[in-house]
Structures are given as structure tokens and as C-alpha cells.
Image: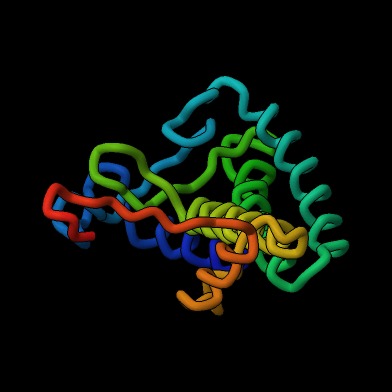
Length: 180
């Protein structure tokens, strides 16, 4: 993923300009070159070296986490985040203005909100997959403890049987005419 990110950044550097936006989906999505010294929406633009150090630490921790992942799903989720983090770290280490202070190359313009790159998308995909995996694991743990029904296999007779065995009494409401 880091290689794909770096390849698209190289194409952006060769084909795009900072002055002109090429619309892809009207004003919603376009291509425009930008150099970001900070994080999303250029936050922390005066602390590029801090983000470089954080990026190095994150790359090491994420690599170890992916290596020790308990499932393929977790390894894939962490791998997406790692690939995106390394893609942007390469820019911070080697892009101008200098080693460790490099500006991240961005080229995907999201309306007038911000300009990002594929590394950002990979990080977002990885975080999304991680959240889905956490929800899946949580549901599995609840099910193994008997705290949630397996709705995929329940039918009305099974649910009714559980209610009756637990002492559940159905209630009826009578109207003034005596019908239920």
C-alpha cells in the first residue's frame, strides 16, 4: 500500500499543479497538488518533525501489532493503517524541504474541505475494518456468554419456547367489546 501511495504521489507530482484543480465528480472530488507540512487540514503545520517521530513510532508499533495479530482480519486492518502511515512517513522523511521535515504530497481534493492522498484513504479503510472487527469480536463474546440471542438462527417458536420456559406470560388487552 505504501508503494501504491508513493506511485500515485509520483504521478501527481508529474501531472498536477497547485494552481489548477481537475474536477472528477463536479466540485465534490478533484485532483489538485498540495504539500502538507501538518496533519489533516494542515493542523500542526509548524510541528512537522513531531509528526515524523510519531510516524516512525506508529510504523514500528503497527508492524509489530500486525505480526502478532490474532486473526487474518486484524492483520489486514492493521496492514492498511500501517501502509498508509508508512506512505506518509516516506514523504516526511525524504520530501522537501528536508530530511525529517518533509511535506506530505496530497492530490485528492474533497470539495473545499481538504486535499488528501491514498495513504489517508488506506488509514481510513484500516480504521474502519478495525472497528468492524472489534464489533464482531464483541458480539461473539456476548454470544459465547449467552448474553445475546443468535438472531440469525432464531424463529418465533424458539423465542416463544424460551419465554414460556422462563415464566413469561403473554398479556392480552381486552377492549370494551371483549375482543382481544
